[in-house]
Length: 442
Image: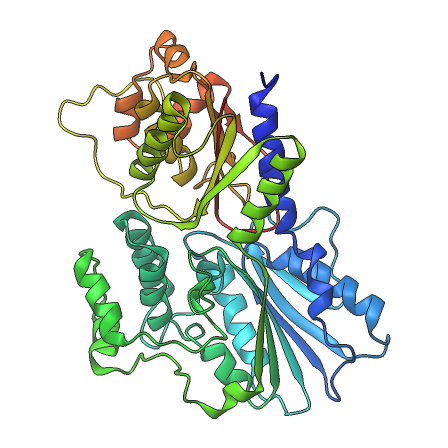
């Protein structure tokens, strides 16, 4: 018998997050000696400040004090590591997931810093998830308000992260390889923390320093598929091809190198190792699961029930691990839905929506506990990373007058788990390898 299932699940989450922290891995990718010219550090993402902190520590330890190092990094509000005061770099905080004026101004400055470099210079780009909104510089003819409206529509559409970033990069003046083009002829080293299924560098933060294979017509097709409103200037730029991204045929890519510091798979493997150290078998289902969060939750519930009842396809006790990036398509509650009163509706993110879908499908299955959380420490726009599920969750909710299905229909998953005392609140983790899910069965 496992004495404290929730504590065990939290240990696995902590192991997954720890594996993705840049301080553990970044120094290995710093060049042994500085360039003949200067080193310019540019970055954007939820983990960008922690990456900058790790880079500054590595430079101080490995390079001579006279090395010329400067730069600008953008991270999300509240994602600066505690106590970090940049010595050589400037750190700007901006809005995520919808861009704001601070992000636009910083992105414009980053593009300006990248211009006018020489072949003797080195640019180190620190890129992580969240960079798409933080590094927001609209394409010619578009305004920040245009980008904000489109970003909100994308977030509510149910589009995958690859689809969203295809649209974002084509309507940007800095993403889709454009930052790399501005850096030429300098050497460019891109260090990445992946938050996307498949770890495609061109998708992470919409690939500001990576060649892009998608086309303007692909972005138009995505907008049509989800009924996304396009400003006239955006439609004209896409239809004419004027907003085409930078392709792999450009000669300056020969001066570029790229390394992945952390991925969802790395973190799942760390969680599996932590489970094994506790004497528990762990099975990684996938690091790249996508789809509607509630439906993915139901699939996980079906698998967990098969393990609990039949020992198939895995023997219990065990833990099932998965990662990736699910989606939540926002919609009004169905006609006649009985939504609980007294609380604001629509509070929740992918992690808790997954968990509520899983809870309903499990219906109190004995011996099944779960944790679903975002590795950046923030699920959606709430203050929680995710939540826990226990066999008693639905019964306790009913005792409080909560209707699980109604709350799911209203996308109020955070509002469902909060009164139960089952939210996981960690604060920003200073990294981001996307969703983490663990189902414990015994």
